[in-house]
Image 1 (cartoon, one colour):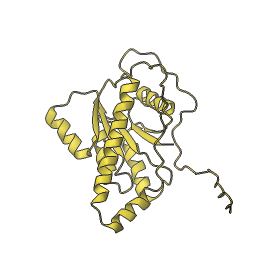
Image 2: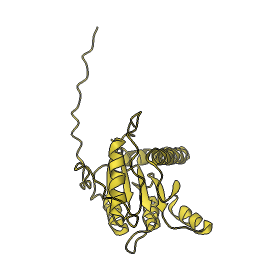
Image 3: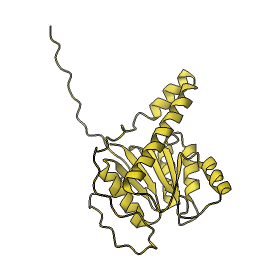
Image 4: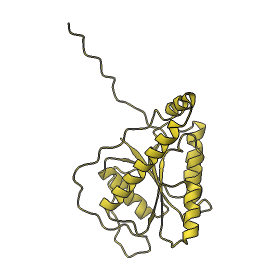
Length: 214
């Protein structure tokens, strides 16, 4: 199962996104502030985190605390392990064209989505497009590398999960994703939604080879 990560300081949006990921057959990993996300990236690079890594990260630019979303996006691109993850930025604030370009250049983000976030189907399509775009960029960059560098990069990525298979039909649209400042009712989240542990163990049994037939 694929993993997508969310860095969002509004818990209601954070929880709702994790719920949508579960509907789409995707594991979710979430952080409520930039400092927590940056600390986790350090754990990944240092080898303290040995679980599966996300192939897509959705980041709110304006976060509580000193570390902002563009800092997290920039740090992801500096990580030798996480640098190929698709990065999608979001914000409820109106940015100037110049500032938006600066942030996109700093983070090398694959897309920028203005809040309020779109409906379920449109959001899913936007994230899938960003994921395809990042894979194409990574493949193009890999093609230009010497053979030794290609082997090294593949060895770093061998723990990535295969892309999730999305259901052909989607459930009924949920309510629009909104800020906590809006007048909304509390979202009920399934008990199966939890923050992921720091490691994930693969328990898939090894399948024996079939016998040869003359």
